[in-house]
Image (cartoon, rainbow, N blue to C red; front, side):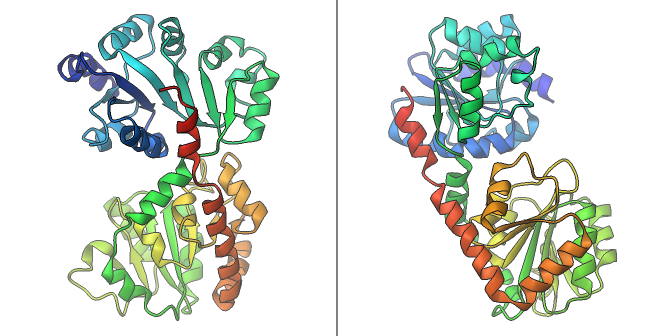
Length: 383
């Protein structure tokens, strides 16, 4: 899919690029980076209406979902990072500014942008010692970092690490995802059936988002034996076999979200989210959130839940995620290594609402205190 999409890029640029307009080029690897950069794109569009927006993706997970995104004037795949393709792309697109989101460091693109004196930036970047740039053989790859006019990083440790290698055109601004989740919360869908399901708050609701089987086994085992709580579970994979597997493990009344129009939720204890695009709105109906993925490659988006001011729970693989580490340190996030720790934490939260409210207040304040990143970055961009 990616290769076919890249073959179409030059045709898209020839037909859609306005030769009389000036373009600001945003590049996001996939959907997650797009969401991270979206607040900046929208603020640029609002503040600088005289410019047009070119948006590129590398992954189909971003392009296929956002190819009709109305915040950009042109959307296409980014061709592979070879000298010929790079020059062809830049000749056709002719951007006046290039902005890369978080983890995109294409050496040939960056070298050619620098040669053409087109300002290049990376936003919401985060750097760790184990990355390729900082290894004994990483000098060649560090060339990419020296091509940026400025690197907008999430934390001081990233700035200090870059400074050790002579890269000082750095601003510590934070993560634009905080601004994005606040925007999403303001736009969250109201789901009347979930109001009915959540009721008057007598039974606290745990929203388990982006779960994998190991997460689900942990959660469902507890849920089955604790009638003083309710559960909304949104699995990462929603194919038929996985949904049937979840339902086979549940011993309390459940209902799929897709069946709400035909059946009442009032007498159900668990809702299964079997469609995409609802999770960020559903977190608002929880008093606690469990974020899946922590027993696999890594946790999913904690900030989607945190923006609602509820405690966030996740598995042990969270160390690459700054916000998870921050929330644990503050007392609003909780990493669990197994069933015993999960049972104890849930027992405390279910029996003592003041504990989850206290942790939730910490989480909500954390999100508020880290907002405003987009404005900081935009004030420093040379547009």
